[in-house]
Length: 446
Image 1 (cartoon, rainbow, N blue to C red):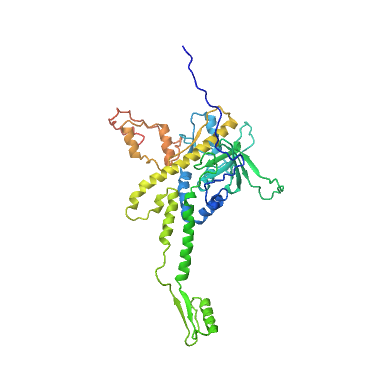
Image 2 (tube, rainbow, N blue to C red; image 1 turned 90 degrees about the horizontal axis):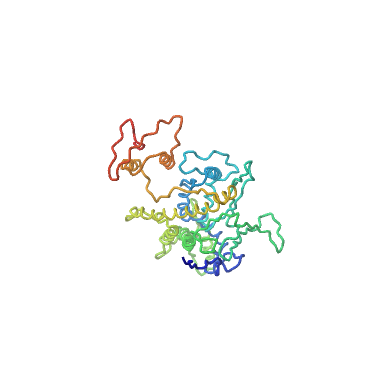
């Protein structure tokens, strides 16, 4: 038998991703707006969120469903001891079990809910970084997760990237109160082995990600200018412009006096003006057709919503808008689901697996963080489940009951008061309906 010929497998890279060196500050040569060059862009995106209701509503519409869905620990074939360890450290229930993690004091403990809220700032800024911090080993030698310390976007001055595009570290500006040297400022560097990095839609090697607000920036900017114009027009034109007429237009002194009267005129309940014979004071409204900026403001408002695929925020109830709501919400739900999957995958790779590697070793199977799907599946009703059971397509068991209790938010059964488990009906042949159980043997879904 002749020996097979094999080609050599490449084990090194000839090309590169980042050609700007380790001190690359993520400069984007294609970004034409100076204010949106990182890290200055973080201040712009922060102001957009704080000062615009539509921008804030888009981010909330995406983030709240992710925070409200139920997050759990899937054993994924890991040993029970490992699964329990991760469940207690992250404070998340185990998939298919009734019991919640043992209650502990919240002070000084890791909170998944708080971490999730901060991690979702990647939607606003494009990235969100955390540093892993552990407690000292306990009596059993295990190191428990103390917190994932946020490293705010506005404090990061550099992101070091390797030649192959991999993250090396982040550098923060010197904290207040330090006394840096003149030529060597006291910067803070956090290495990649201690980082958890959530990055939205990055291009290769760009660890600043892509902010959800970048396409909405021009609409936000023009909308603000139009709103100021609208406010100024309403302020000036709604009251009219005082115009004073002098008795003798050839007298500069009298003309100046009439101008002063018109300038100092203030409308009010007790306002009044005293004029000499032949003098007059009028409030003149603007003449001609004035430009109404309201349609342009509304248009830019809608474009901001489109940046987050939040089309339903633009529904006005006219001409079949509600008929489009379900179609639009499906696309939006898929985008929210994708963002949640990004958080899940990053957390599994850099929180769960790191926790297992530190305490149990790299060869131990790791459980996974999972979450309930967001809006992409129709909730199964009791009637639908009963039809599946009666048709023999679904067999009720303890795991199914526990899953239903978790999904419906029902409490775990009390073993002290629990009756004998119901006897499930015998599976029927495919396509035939099973006979109904007798009254003394109800099915699980009757």
